[in-house]
Length: 241
Image (cartoon, one colour):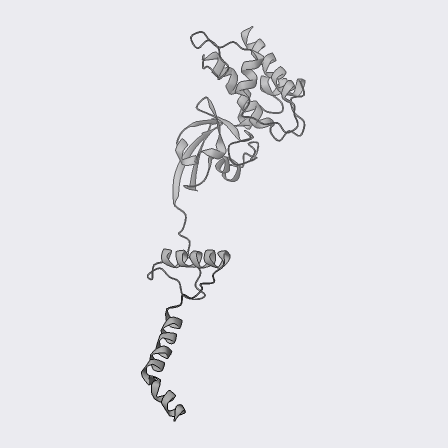
């Protein structure tokens, strides 16, 4: 009797409801999202790459990307008094045009970033780094390289001064140094000021400080700077007299 009474006193629906509440609590329990930082970066990179490639441009397996042919253009370069007609890639630098197409290898390729000055040439009377300019930008320009300044039998005065004062060691930077030196004296003669010119109204003085400042873009890894300045000063003195 007592057992029947206890069983009768229990609510069978309450037990079922308790089981449902238990399952509901398990369903709404937040689940942990385990994703490492490295995995997140990898997934993000793949997603970005997938979005960048449109379905129309996606390549099939084994298909190699095709590079467009170079854009060619004719160009005339007046180099060392000789007119040269070339058909070159529009991306060709003046330095590569001189070295690879005209085989004037006196102009050196050093850093190829315009930081060392080894590629200096004179274009329309002004010095520039030939690695930083495209050949097609200098149609019919007058270009002077180290080969056009002098020959072994008839040296330019600046070349002779560099030899006399030992303004070089390995010699790799020397062509750019000499071309820049010739242009520096021309700049001073034309009254073009530099960063160290104190009086912008009067012509700049031809001093060692002026020469060093103007030649600062030409790097000599061997450290022959003092001899280079001495060579330039000698040529400048001979021009004044």
